[in-house]
Image (spheres, protein in one colour):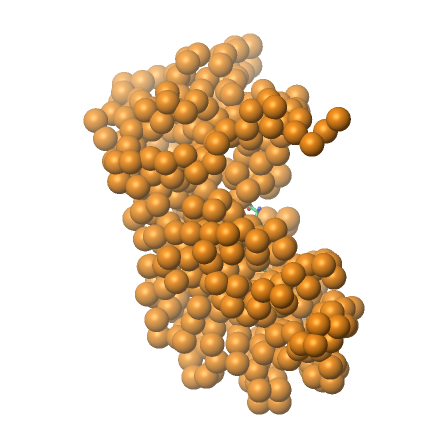
Length: 429
Ligand code: LLP
Protein backbone atom coordinates (compact mmCIF):
# COMPACT_ATOMS: atom_id res chain seq x y z
CA UNK A 1 0.00 0.00 0.00
CA UNK A 2 1.17 3.46 -0.82
CA UNK A 3 -0.74 6.51 0.37
CA UNK A 4 -0.31 8.80 -2.68
CA UNK A 5 -2.71 8.76 -5.64
CA UNK A 6 -4.67 10.99 -7.99
CA UNK A 7 -8.32 11.39 -7.12
CA UNK A 8 -10.56 13.55 -9.31
CA UNK A 9 -7.46 14.95 -10.98
CA UNK A 10 -5.81 16.03 -7.74
CA UNK A 11 -2.88 14.33 -6.02
CA UNK A 12 -3.87 13.09 -2.57
CA UNK A 13 -2.05 11.78 0.47
CA UNK A 14 -4.53 9.25 1.86
CA UNK A 15 -7.81 11.27 1.82
CA UNK A 16 -6.15 14.67 1.91
CA UNK A 17 -5.66 16.76 -1.27
CA UNK A 18 -2.04 17.89 -1.26
CA UNK A 19 -2.99 21.23 -2.82
CA UNK A 20 -4.89 22.10 0.36
CA UNK A 21 -1.77 21.45 2.43
CA UNK A 22 0.48 23.43 0.07
CA UNK A 23 -1.95 26.38 0.22
CA UNK A 24 -2.41 26.25 3.99
CA UNK A 25 1.16 25.56 5.11
CA UNK A 26 3.25 26.88 2.22
CA UNK A 27 6.12 25.14 0.44
CA UNK A 28 8.64 23.53 0.51
CA UNK A 29 6.69 21.11 2.65
CA UNK A 30 7.28 17.51 3.65
CA UNK A 31 4.11 15.41 3.89
CA UNK A 32 4.03 11.89 5.35
CA UNK A 33 1.33 9.23 5.21
CA UNK A 34 0.89 7.58 8.62
CA UNK A 35 -1.06 4.72 7.04
CA UNK A 36 1.80 3.90 4.67
CA UNK A 37 4.42 3.78 7.46
CA UNK A 38 2.17 1.54 9.53
CA UNK A 39 1.33 -0.69 6.57
CA UNK A 40 4.99 -1.14 5.61
CA UNK A 41 5.95 -1.97 9.19
CA UNK A 42 3.14 -4.51 9.53
CA UNK A 43 3.87 -6.15 6.17
CA UNK A 44 7.55 -6.59 6.98
CA UNK A 45 6.91 -7.72 10.54
CA UNK A 46 4.35 -10.30 9.35
CA UNK A 47 6.61 -11.61 6.58
CA UNK A 48 9.37 -12.18 9.16
CA UNK A 49 7.05 -13.99 11.57
CA UNK A 50 8.72 -17.40 11.00
CA UNK A 51 11.80 -15.99 12.78
CA UNK A 52 12.07 -14.90 16.41
CA UNK A 53 12.78 -11.29 15.42
CA UNK A 54 12.67 -7.58 16.25
CA UNK A 55 12.38 -4.83 13.64
CA UNK A 56 14.61 -1.96 14.78
CA UNK A 57 13.75 1.07 12.64
CA UNK A 58 16.89 2.94 11.45
CA UNK A 59 16.15 6.37 12.92
CA UNK A 60 18.56 8.14 10.56
CA UNK A 61 16.10 7.71 7.68
CA UNK A 62 13.50 10.00 9.25
CA UNK A 63 13.81 11.04 12.87
CA UNK A 64 10.67 13.13 13.27
CA UNK A 65 9.19 12.47 16.73
CA UNK A 66 5.76 11.64 15.31
CA UNK A 67 7.18 8.99 13.00
CA UNK A 68 9.18 7.50 15.89
CA UNK A 69 6.15 7.56 18.14
CA UNK A 70 4.01 5.86 15.49
CA UNK A 71 6.58 3.08 15.09
CA UNK A 72 7.08 2.73 18.84
CA UNK A 73 3.31 2.19 19.03
CA UNK A 74 3.66 -0.66 16.53
CA UNK A 75 6.21 -2.33 18.82
CA UNK A 76 9.31 -1.41 16.81
CA UNK A 77 12.77 -1.23 18.28
CA UNK A 78 15.24 1.36 16.97
CA UNK A 79 18.65 1.39 15.36
CA UNK A 80 20.40 4.58 16.50
CA UNK A 81 23.74 6.16 15.61
CA UNK A 82 24.06 9.03 18.10
CA UNK A 83 23.02 10.21 21.54
CA UNK A 84 20.73 12.64 19.71
CA UNK A 85 18.84 9.80 18.05
CA UNK A 86 18.51 7.95 21.36
CA UNK A 87 17.20 11.14 22.98
CA UNK A 88 14.61 11.48 20.21
CA UNK A 89 13.50 7.84 20.57
CA UNK A 90 13.00 8.25 24.32
CA UNK A 91 11.15 11.56 23.86
CA UNK A 92 8.87 9.80 21.36
CA UNK A 93 8.01 7.02 23.83
CA UNK A 94 10.37 4.38 22.39
CA UNK A 95 11.95 1.77 24.63
CA UNK A 96 15.76 2.11 25.08
CA UNK A 97 15.88 -1.62 25.86
CA UNK A 98 14.93 -2.17 22.19
CA UNK A 99 17.67 0.13 20.83
CA UNK A 100 20.90 -0.89 19.15
CA UNK A 101 23.63 1.72 18.85
CA UNK A 102 25.73 1.63 15.63
CA UNK A 103 28.34 3.97 14.14
CA UNK A 104 32.12 4.03 13.80
CA UNK A 105 32.78 7.08 15.99
CA UNK A 106 30.87 6.75 19.27
CA UNK A 107 32.25 9.20 21.83
CA UNK A 108 32.78 8.43 25.51
CA UNK A 109 29.87 10.74 26.38
CA UNK A 110 27.57 8.95 23.96
CA UNK A 111 28.56 5.53 25.32
CA UNK A 112 27.85 6.70 28.88
CA UNK A 113 24.51 8.25 27.85
CA UNK A 114 23.43 4.98 26.20
CA UNK A 115 24.57 2.83 29.15
CA UNK A 116 22.69 5.05 31.60
CA UNK A 117 19.52 4.53 29.58
CA UNK A 118 19.91 0.76 29.27
CA UNK A 119 20.11 0.07 25.54
CA UNK A 120 19.81 -3.44 24.08
CA UNK A 121 23.33 -3.49 22.57
CA UNK A 122 26.15 -1.53 21.00
CA UNK A 123 27.06 -2.58 17.46
CA UNK A 124 30.82 -2.21 17.78
CA UNK A 125 32.82 -1.23 14.72
CA UNK A 126 36.49 -1.41 15.86
CA UNK A 127 38.80 -2.78 18.56
CA UNK A 128 39.61 0.65 20.04
CA UNK A 129 35.86 1.18 20.39
CA UNK A 130 35.54 -2.12 22.30
CA UNK A 131 38.27 -0.94 24.70
CA UNK A 132 36.56 2.42 25.19
CA UNK A 133 33.14 0.87 25.82
CA UNK A 134 34.69 -1.50 28.35
CA UNK A 135 36.45 1.36 30.18
CA UNK A 136 33.29 3.50 30.36
CA UNK A 137 31.19 0.54 31.53
CA UNK A 138 33.73 -0.39 34.25
CA UNK A 139 33.77 3.24 35.47
CA UNK A 140 29.98 2.94 35.89
CA UNK A 141 30.17 -0.48 37.57
CA UNK A 142 28.46 -2.13 34.57
CA UNK A 143 29.03 -4.54 31.75
CA UNK A 144 28.04 -3.17 28.34
CA UNK A 145 25.93 -5.38 26.04
CA UNK A 146 27.80 -5.75 22.76
CA UNK A 147 27.42 -7.13 19.24
CA UNK A 148 30.43 -6.79 16.94
CA UNK A 149 29.74 -5.60 13.40
CA UNK A 150 31.26 -7.84 10.76
CA UNK A 151 32.35 -6.50 7.40
CA UNK A 152 31.68 -9.54 5.19
CA UNK A 153 33.32 -8.09 2.05
CA UNK A 154 30.23 -8.60 -0.10
CA UNK A 155 29.17 -6.51 -3.12
CA UNK A 156 25.78 -4.88 -2.42
CA UNK A 157 25.23 -3.64 -5.98
CA UNK A 158 24.21 -0.14 -4.91
CA UNK A 159 25.60 3.41 -5.19
CA UNK A 160 29.18 3.51 -3.92
CA UNK A 161 28.36 6.08 -1.21
CA UNK A 162 25.79 3.75 0.39
CA UNK A 163 27.64 0.45 0.07
CA UNK A 164 29.02 -0.53 3.47
CA UNK A 165 29.96 -4.22 3.39
CA UNK A 166 33.11 -4.15 1.24
CA UNK A 167 36.57 -4.39 2.79
CA UNK A 168 37.42 -0.87 1.57
CA UNK A 169 34.46 0.62 3.51
CA UNK A 170 35.08 2.09 6.98
CA UNK A 171 32.38 -0.06 8.61
CA UNK A 172 32.69 -3.11 10.83
CA UNK A 173 35.64 -5.41 11.46
CA UNK A 174 37.11 -7.66 8.75
CA UNK A 175 35.52 -11.11 8.56
CA UNK A 176 38.82 -12.96 9.12
CA UNK A 177 39.66 -11.06 12.31
CA UNK A 178 36.32 -11.71 14.00
CA UNK A 179 37.03 -14.90 16.04
CA UNK A 180 40.14 -13.27 17.50
CA UNK A 181 38.26 -10.06 18.31
CA UNK A 182 35.53 -12.03 20.11
CA UNK A 183 38.15 -13.91 22.15
CA UNK A 184 39.72 -10.61 23.19
CA UNK A 185 36.37 -8.96 23.88
CA UNK A 186 35.27 -11.87 26.08
CA UNK A 187 38.19 -11.11 28.38
CA UNK A 188 37.40 -7.37 28.72
CA UNK A 189 35.89 -6.62 32.14
CA UNK A 190 33.25 -4.15 30.91
CA UNK A 191 31.97 -6.17 27.94
CA UNK A 192 29.11 -8.66 27.82
CA UNK A 193 29.00 -10.31 24.40
CA UNK A 194 25.38 -10.61 23.34
CA UNK A 195 25.44 -11.04 19.59
CA UNK A 196 26.83 -10.29 16.17
CA UNK A 197 25.84 -7.84 13.45
CA UNK A 198 26.29 -7.09 9.75
CA UNK A 199 24.91 -4.53 7.30
CA UNK A 200 26.03 -4.49 3.68
CA UNK A 201 24.46 -1.32 2.31
CA UNK A 202 21.32 0.58 1.43
CA UNK A 203 18.79 0.64 -1.45
CA UNK A 204 19.53 -2.98 -2.34
CA UNK A 205 17.05 -4.15 -4.97
CA UNK A 206 18.00 -7.79 -5.42
CA UNK A 207 18.00 -10.71 -2.97
CA UNK A 208 21.41 -11.92 -4.11
CA UNK A 209 23.67 -9.71 -1.94
CA UNK A 210 21.60 -10.54 1.16
CA UNK A 211 21.75 -14.27 0.39
CA UNK A 212 25.48 -14.06 -0.24
CA UNK A 213 26.22 -12.17 2.98
CA UNK A 214 24.08 -14.49 5.12
CA UNK A 215 25.55 -17.64 3.57
CA UNK A 216 29.03 -16.33 4.32
CA UNK A 217 28.07 -15.25 7.84
CA UNK A 218 26.17 -18.32 9.03
CA UNK A 219 29.08 -20.69 9.86
CA UNK A 220 30.88 -17.86 11.68
CA UNK A 221 27.72 -16.94 13.59
CA UNK A 222 27.16 -20.57 14.64
CA UNK A 223 30.74 -20.95 15.87
CA UNK A 224 30.61 -17.74 17.91
CA UNK A 225 27.10 -18.51 19.19
CA UNK A 226 28.40 -21.79 20.63
CA UNK A 227 31.67 -20.36 21.86
CA UNK A 228 30.36 -17.18 23.51
CA UNK A 229 26.67 -17.87 24.11
CA UNK A 230 25.49 -15.23 21.62
CA UNK A 231 21.71 -14.72 21.49
CA UNK A 232 21.32 -11.99 18.82
CA UNK A 233 22.12 -11.84 15.11
CA UNK A 234 21.37 -8.46 13.55
CA UNK A 235 21.27 -8.58 9.77
CA UNK A 236 21.09 -4.80 9.26
CA UNK A 237 18.81 -2.93 6.87
CA UNK A 238 19.10 -2.10 3.20
CA UNK A 239 15.85 -3.33 1.67
CA UNK A 240 15.39 -1.07 -1.37
CA UNK A 241 12.24 0.71 -2.56
CA UNK A 242 10.73 1.76 -5.90
CA UNK A 243 11.64 5.30 -6.90
CA UNK A 244 10.14 5.15 -10.41
CA UNK A 245 6.49 4.60 -11.21
CA UNK A 246 5.69 4.54 -7.55
CA UNK A 247 2.27 6.21 -7.76
CA UNK A 248 -0.50 3.79 -6.87
CA UNK A 249 -2.83 4.99 -9.61
CA UNK A 250 -3.10 7.64 -12.28
CA UNK A 251 -1.52 6.98 -15.63
CA UNK A 252 -0.87 10.32 -17.26
CA UNK A 253 0.75 10.50 -20.64
CA UNK A 254 4.23 11.24 -19.34
CA UNK A 255 4.21 8.27 -17.03
CA UNK A 256 5.24 5.36 -19.22
CA UNK A 257 8.68 5.45 -20.71
CA UNK A 258 12.23 4.23 -20.49
CA UNK A 259 13.57 3.70 -17.01
CA UNK A 260 10.17 3.54 -15.36
CA UNK A 261 10.05 -0.23 -15.18
CA UNK A 262 11.76 -0.91 -11.86
CA UNK A 263 11.31 -4.37 -10.39
CA UNK A 264 12.26 -4.02 -6.77
CA UNK A 265 12.86 -6.74 -4.26
CA UNK A 266 9.47 -7.51 -2.70
CA UNK A 267 9.00 -7.92 1.03
CA UNK A 268 7.99 -11.52 0.44
CA UNK A 269 11.14 -12.31 -1.56
CA UNK A 270 13.36 -10.56 0.99
CA UNK A 271 11.71 -12.41 3.89
CA UNK A 272 11.98 -15.71 2.02
CA UNK A 273 15.71 -15.20 1.46
CA UNK A 274 16.39 -14.28 5.06
CA UNK A 275 14.16 -16.87 6.69
CA UNK A 276 15.61 -19.71 4.65
CA UNK A 277 19.19 -18.53 5.27
CA UNK A 278 18.62 -18.36 9.03
CA UNK A 279 16.31 -21.30 9.53
CA UNK A 280 17.08 -23.24 12.71
CA UNK A 281 19.76 -20.85 13.93
CA UNK A 282 18.04 -20.47 17.28
CA UNK A 283 18.92 -16.82 17.78
CA UNK A 284 16.90 -13.60 17.95
CA UNK A 285 17.19 -11.92 14.53
CA UNK A 286 17.26 -8.13 14.43
CA UNK A 287 16.40 -6.14 11.29
CA UNK A 288 17.32 -2.48 10.81
CA UNK A 289 15.19 -1.15 7.94
CA UNK A 290 15.02 2.60 7.42
CA UNK A 291 14.13 3.45 3.84
CA UNK A 292 11.67 0.59 3.40
CA UNK A 293 9.47 1.81 6.26
CA UNK A 294 9.34 5.52 5.44
CA UNK A 295 10.74 6.15 1.92
CA UNK A 296 7.53 5.84 -0.06
CA UNK A 297 5.51 7.30 2.82
CA UNK A 298 6.74 10.86 2.24
CA UNK A 299 6.75 13.55 -0.46
CA UNK A 300 8.29 16.99 -0.72
CA UNK A 301 5.90 19.62 -2.09
CA UNK A 302 7.27 22.56 -4.03
CA UNK A 303 6.02 25.49 -6.12
CA UNK A 304 7.26 26.56 -9.53
CA UNK A 305 8.74 30.07 -9.35
CA UNK A 306 9.94 30.62 -12.92
CA UNK A 307 10.21 28.75 -16.18
CA UNK A 308 13.36 29.73 -18.07
CA UNK A 309 13.80 28.65 -21.67
CA UNK A 310 17.10 28.69 -23.52
CA UNK A 311 18.01 27.38 -26.96
CA UNK A 312 18.81 23.93 -25.55
CA UNK A 313 17.00 23.66 -22.23
CA UNK A 314 13.86 24.37 -20.29
CA UNK A 315 14.54 25.03 -16.61
CA UNK A 316 11.64 24.71 -14.21
CA UNK A 317 12.93 26.70 -11.23
CA UNK A 318 11.17 25.80 -7.99
CA UNK A 319 11.25 26.86 -4.35
CA UNK A 320 12.72 23.61 -2.95
CA UNK A 321 16.45 23.06 -3.19
CA UNK A 322 19.23 20.59 -2.59
CA UNK A 323 19.31 21.82 1.00
CA UNK A 324 15.78 20.39 1.44
CA UNK A 325 16.41 17.11 -0.43
CA UNK A 326 20.03 16.30 -1.22
CA UNK A 327 19.64 12.79 -2.66
CA UNK A 328 19.84 13.73 -6.39
CA UNK A 329 22.97 15.84 -5.79
CA UNK A 330 24.71 13.38 -3.48
CA UNK A 331 23.76 9.93 -4.81
CA UNK A 332 22.43 10.71 -8.29
CA UNK A 333 19.10 9.74 -6.71
CA UNK A 334 16.10 9.63 -9.08
CA UNK A 335 12.79 10.86 -7.64
CA UNK A 336 9.46 10.89 -9.47
CA UNK A 337 8.00 14.38 -9.95
CA UNK A 338 4.22 14.59 -10.06
CA UNK A 339 2.18 17.79 -10.57
CA UNK A 340 -0.51 18.17 -7.90
CA UNK A 341 -3.05 18.64 -10.74
CA UNK A 342 -3.02 15.53 -12.88
CA UNK A 343 -1.89 16.45 -16.43
CA UNK A 344 -4.43 15.91 -19.20
CA UNK A 345 -3.73 12.90 -21.38
CA UNK A 346 -3.37 15.36 -24.29
CA UNK A 347 -0.69 17.39 -22.40
CA UNK A 348 2.39 18.19 -24.43
CA UNK A 349 5.28 16.25 -22.91
CA UNK A 350 8.73 17.83 -23.32
CA UNK A 351 12.10 17.45 -21.57
CA UNK A 352 12.87 19.84 -18.74
CA UNK A 353 15.34 20.29 -15.90
CA UNK A 354 13.63 20.79 -12.54
CA UNK A 355 16.04 22.84 -10.45
CA UNK A 356 16.16 24.62 -7.11
CA UNK A 357 17.25 28.14 -6.16
CA UNK A 358 20.55 27.16 -4.48
CA UNK A 359 23.74 28.53 -6.03
CA UNK A 360 25.17 25.20 -7.18
CA UNK A 361 24.87 23.39 -10.52
CA UNK A 362 24.21 20.20 -8.54
CA UNK A 363 20.97 21.73 -7.26
CA UNK A 364 18.50 19.79 -9.41
CA UNK A 365 15.70 17.26 -8.93
CA UNK A 366 15.51 16.11 -12.56
CA UNK A 367 17.54 16.63 -15.72
CA UNK A 368 16.20 16.28 -19.27
CA UNK A 369 13.12 14.58 -17.82
CA UNK A 370 9.98 14.30 -20.00
CA UNK A 371 7.57 16.56 -18.13
CA UNK A 372 4.09 17.96 -18.69
CA UNK A 373 3.94 21.77 -19.02
CA UNK A 374 4.54 23.61 -15.73
CA UNK A 375 3.97 27.30 -15.10
CA UNK A 376 4.87 29.73 -12.37
CA UNK A 377 2.62 29.10 -9.37
CA UNK A 378 1.99 25.41 -10.16
CA UNK A 379 2.69 22.93 -7.39
CA UNK A 380 4.25 19.51 -7.67
CA UNK A 381 5.35 16.68 -5.41
CA UNK A 382 8.75 15.02 -5.36
CA UNK A 383 7.89 11.45 -4.48
CA UNK A 384 9.59 8.85 -2.28
CA UNK A 385 11.15 11.58 -0.16
CA UNK A 386 10.20 10.16 3.25
CA UNK A 387 13.62 8.57 3.85
CA UNK A 388 16.84 10.59 3.97
CA UNK A 389 14.87 13.70 2.93
CA UNK A 390 14.20 16.02 5.84
CA UNK A 391 16.70 14.03 7.93
CA UNK A 392 19.51 15.23 5.64
CA UNK A 393 18.16 18.76 5.10
CA UNK A 394 20.32 21.76 5.95
CA UNK A 395 19.97 25.52 5.99
CA UNK A 396 22.58 25.99 3.23
CA UNK A 397 22.15 29.37 1.53
CA UNK A 398 20.40 30.43 4.79
CA UNK A 399 17.19 28.76 3.75
CA UNK A 400 14.95 27.90 6.73
CA UNK A 401 14.12 24.21 7.17
CA UNK A 402 10.73 23.21 5.74
CA UNK A 403 7.70 22.22 7.82
CA UNK A 404 6.61 18.58 8.14
CA UNK A 405 3.03 17.30 8.10
CA UNK A 406 1.66 13.90 9.07
CA UNK A 407 -1.55 12.84 7.32
CA UNK A 408 -3.88 10.24 8.76
CA UNK A 409 -6.96 9.57 6.62
CA UNK A 410 -8.54 12.95 5.95
CA UNK A 411 -6.74 14.87 8.68
CA UNK A 412 -3.33 16.50 8.79
CA UNK A 413 -1.14 17.56 11.68
CA UNK A 414 1.92 19.82 11.65
CA UNK A 415 4.64 17.65 13.19
CA UNK A 416 7.39 20.20 12.75
CA UNK A 417 6.94 23.93 12.28
CA UNK A 418 8.62 25.69 9.40
CA UNK A 419 11.76 27.47 10.61
CA UNK A 420 11.51 31.24 10.74
CA UNK A 421 14.27 33.69 9.85
CA UNK A 422 14.72 34.24 13.60
CA UNK A 423 15.16 30.45 14.11
CA UNK A 424 17.86 30.59 11.46
CA UNK A 425 20.10 32.87 13.49
CA UNK A 426 19.15 31.59 16.97
CA UNK A 427 22.27 30.96 19.04
CA UNK A 428 24.53 33.21 16.94
CA UNK A 429 25.87 36.59 17.91
N1 LLP B 1 21.72 -0.20 9.60
C1 LLP B 1 22.89 0.43 9.42
C2 LLP B 1 24.05 0.01 10.20
C3 LLP B 1 23.00 1.47 8.48
O1 LLP B 1 24.16 2.07 8.28
C4 LLP B 1 21.85 1.85 7.73
C5 LLP B 1 21.90 2.94 6.76
C6 LLP B 1 20.64 1.18 7.98
C7 LLP B 1 20.62 0.16 8.91
C8 LLP B 1 19.37 1.52 7.27
O2 LLP B 1 19.48 1.26 5.90
P1 LLP B 1 18.17 1.32 4.96
O3 LLP B 1 17.26 0.21 5.39
O4 LLP B 1 17.54 2.66 5.14
O5 LLP B 1 18.68 1.13 3.59
N2 LLP B 1 21.37 8.71 2.82
C9 LLP B 1 21.44 7.58 1.92
C10 LLP B 1 21.32 6.27 2.66
C11 LLP B 1 22.34 6.11 3.76
C12 LLP B 1 22.20 4.81 4.52
C13 LLP B 1 23.07 4.81 5.72
N3 LLP B 1 22.95 3.63 6.53
C14 LLP B 1 20.39 7.73 0.85
O6 LLP B 1 19.64 8.70 0.86
O7 LLP B 1 20.32 6.89 -0.05
